[in-house]
Length: 393
Ligand code: GLA
Image (cartoon, rainbow, N blue to C red; front, side, top):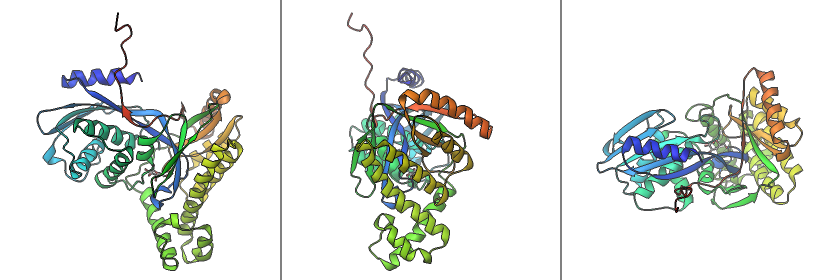
């Protein structure tokens, strides 16, 4: 990654010390939306857009954090981290620090430089990538490490408690545990996962509607509340239903009439999308791409009509994709209400697909989209010093 040398120099110039570097990717979710906080299944993939974190120790108890994306430095004494963020970009790394402190991990004072290319507010988990990269960096300075599953859980806690966004575990988990050329089917209850290979001839094309979404407020939390309302109604009949993971389509058919219609629809989306995520992993493993495409289409329709988390622009983008040659599957990805669509496209057709999407979407909406050709990538890790060309001559 070209940015590695850039961030290193930035850090060195600003803080006069050589940093250690860590990288954590964003993600696309292939299928299984809003199922994570219901303990259901999801199948995301890490992408080759990522956040880099460069860190070095300080002698005092200050967290000095510079974001190259925002061109801004924030300095905070360890005693003044607090337990809640201030709706600022620095909430993410500071939330990570607060969480590690709560865990009793002795992070020393540090200088941290953050630089990423995950488009923000586009449903590609730029937040999770900042959290995970920052946490690996701080753990390194503390002279310790944690299993990736634990890093994901702590980063989720930072986002829930410090940033104040009620997200599930999916984004942080795949940022930690993703694998190159694979989708990751995650059981969000046990955190057991399996990697399903994405065939080499398929490209991940991500189409940004440019309609921004925000998680900290509004719709995401409303959806969660509706889902909890429906779960409580089912629980009256079957007390063993802790979360919708434990409910079936039959339960909804039997007792759904006791729910307000919007609540029933939200629950039906979650129960069926979780099943579709497992079926999609099976389809990928069996190389049944036609089935995978059908499942993605059903997932989009369910997200649009039952969960009502799509938007006009995303529907236009997805319907346009369905008409293109080489398109295996397409749907809106992520938390909803804008952001990006994920498209599985025959690699030989990917360039033409991207061009047709850009043109067709702009014609239909008047908005110029961004189209990213991506790959399923490795999860977070330390960045090794690239070998200098000709170093031993
Ligand atoms: C956001 C959240 C995730 C998940 C998705 C929807 O990305 O951070 O935990 O709930 O929305 O699937």
